[in-house]
Image 1 (cartoon, rainbow, N blue to C red):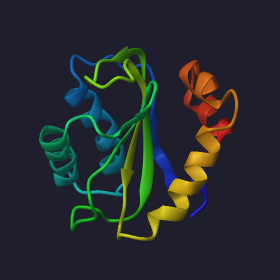
Image 2 (cartoon, rainbow, N blue to C red):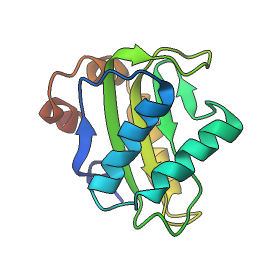
Image 3 (cartoon, rainbow, N blue to C red):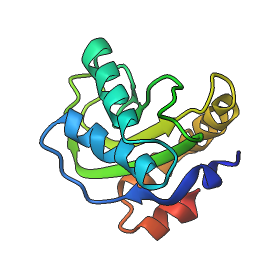
Length: 144
């Protein structure tokens, strides 16, 4: 699955502020639900992971990839992005989180190629800065 097609039509949201990291995670995962890539219970599963394991999915300074294991709540593999312009505190050493991606994986393997492409893309010089300063969804889509 090409990276750009992993993001559905409703999967990018900008200019959020969140009162908690849990609320921020919910915003991002709900984008997957809105796009029909996951059922509402997937949000519960991701938040349960956060509760049990802590903010392990904060993977780099300012970047998190919220997810849970494949389950019946996942309808298809996909990605979503909620941009928090003011950042949100996760309790990790990589705060504040401004780019909160959500990942739904339909099974244990099919998303691995997508994650490899995502890692290469997010590592491109200047891409994180461009994403963090994006003023519109169209700007983010053009970066994909």
